Amino acid sequence: MAHDPEEDELLHEGLTFEVEEDEHDDGGRKVRSKGIYLLPNLVTTAALFAGFYAIIAAMKGIYDKAALAVFVAALFDGMDGRVARMTNTQSAFGAEYDSLSDMVSFGLAPALIVYSDSLSALGKMGWMASFIYVAAAAFRLARFNVQISQVDKRYFIGLASPLAAAIVASLVWAGHDNQVNVRVAWVAIVIAIVTVITAFLMVSNFRYYSFKEFDRSRVPFAVMLPVVFLLCAVASDLPLGLLAVTLVYAGSGPVAALWRRRRLVSLG
Image (cartoon, rainbow, N blue to C red):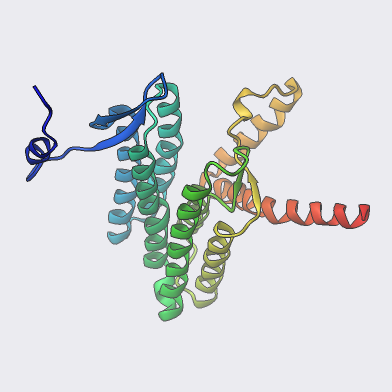
């Protein structure tokens, strides 16, 4: 019986949820697949839920839980790609869904949390700083999508949006954990400056080590001791520890760029 494309289109018309995308089989032939892979998209949905919860918690003024939810979203975001690769379930749909989830969890959520917490005290300056962060996150994700096959996977070009979100979230979390009055003008201005600098680092061309190959690398046994001390230091004051680690990582891009430029000048 001949396949009628028009009949197939009518079957999927109306109140249905169906995804079709072109994929390649083991022989390299293009095939059209229906449906989506459950496991990686379920993990992405968990990340999206955490980002959504962060926004709701910020609206209710529960800023410590809102900040923690951003970190939970980052944890799930780091898992979905690995799950897709381990189960060989990568797809164009999954990549697009992941980007949209990232925009909510690491673009909108941190900006709304920091605005509700402290930047709203600055009036227009506050919401402008928050919007700059949101726009930078959108630019960062769009650039990542179009350059994903062109860049060295060992490095991120620009600060990755989950790390940028971690800076903003840990800044809010540390402020509340240490009972800092973040609505005092000079404190709010400092937070706004950090937020804007973080936004510009996302759209910069600074290279950041991605750690994607770190789990397959052998290191001297003695290296584990400083790592244990670092984990203990972070755990002793989790909000401040996370803020310190994320700020050091954010600063590593510009410092490495200056170091490379200085070496080139000295060699030239």
